[in-house]
Image (cartoon, rainbow, N blue to C red):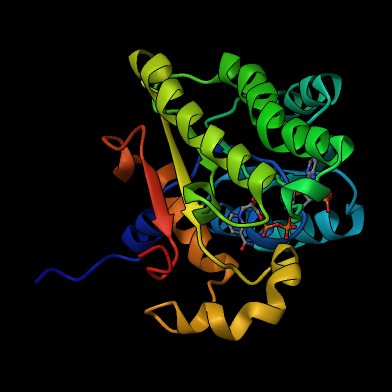
Length: 256
Ligand code: NAP
């Protein structure tokens, strides 16, 4: 077998070189892991956050130290004005958007009878309107080979005391399939990942149930942010060019 030249592994290891990724909610948790993972694959990354400025700057610093480019951009995805500025700033900095990851989300939990209107509005504004606002602005700049990756959840299949959150994620699955049809003729794929229990800040309210969740998970542990990020990296790659309109469970078979 011919020896691999020093040049070849670098090419193989940077499958997203020259690509620009916009990742919402990339200051913490899964979004931060996705930002680091796509940057490690060579992408330039716009790291969106809404409140955690220091954490977002830390993600950017780690990416830049790793030898690629990143910027942190504050924007509340539920504000159309913020979202327009987010996309404009990404274009001003990097000139294009190839990969959009609609990761930002919130996770309110309560019985339906305790669900107040402000909480319901908040979850619909951030988890439902947010991905629509960001996609509507970003897709204007995307061309053939573009990748949109949305975030559903195992909860979309139904989860007690999570009606608003579960409903918001079920919406994302319908949105994903619909946009795959709409943007397919433009050569843009649209998929969703559906994480199970993943150990981030968001999982904190579920920690009292950790042992039970692990006991129900055939792979015997909680998911980690990097478990999700590697699947997003695949969907963002050229290798996934024939995959669209899919919801990919990333949950250690907790969903079975
Ligand atoms: P997380 O640790 O709570 O992080 C949430 C991220 O979203 C933060 O970076 C936060 O940034 C950002 N964010 C929240 N509201 C925002 C807004 N209005 N505008 C812009 N950014 C906003 O959550 P995670 O666990 O990484 O979850 C990421 C995605 O995976 C979510 O869509 C979630 O629903 C989904 N998911 C998670 C799990 C799980 O078990 N963790 C399971 C299934 C699905 P700031 O701090 O700057 O506000």
